[in-house]
Length: 211
Image (cartoon, rainbow, N blue to C red; front, side):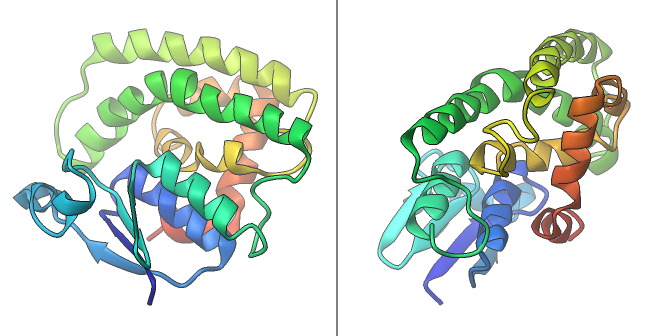
C-alpha cells in the first residue's frame, strides 16, 4: 500500500487528511501514533515531520507534513479520483484559494482554540475549559462567521456552487465545535448552519469523524 498516514484520529489535523483520502476513495494505511506516550517525537514520525507533530504522510517515496499541504496534494495528485476538490478553471481556483487562506488564517485561529477548550479539554482530557479564552475566541469566531454568512448567502459552498478543498479543510473542527455550546454561534446564522450540516453529512466526513 503506497499511502500511509501517521497520526491519531483524535487529532483534527489527522482527520483533515483522512477525510481528503476518503473523499477521493483512496486506499491508505493509518499508522497510529500515541501522543500520550510521546510517539510523535520519535521514529518513524520524527523523520517525516521534524516538528514532531501529527500527521505525517507518505505516498511512495514522497513524504509530507502539515495537514493542509497534504490535503492539497491529495486534491491535485488524485484530481481524477472520487470527489472533485479543485477546478480546472483558474478563476474558480483563485476564489477557492481565497477561502482556503481564510480557513487557515481567520477561521482556524479562533476555532482551533475553542475546540481545544470546549471539546478536547473537557471531553477527551477531563479538564476544565478556560472561560476567558472561550469568551474571547467565541467573539472572534462570530465575527468570522458573519462574513461566512454573507458569502454562503450567495453560493452553496465557500468556493462556489461545488464542494471543494476550501470546505473540506473545515470539517474536523466543525465536527468538534458542533458538540459544544459554540454550536449556537453557527445555528444563529442560517446559511452557515446549513453549510456545516451539509459538510458533516457527507459520507467521508461521517466515516472519519464517527470513528
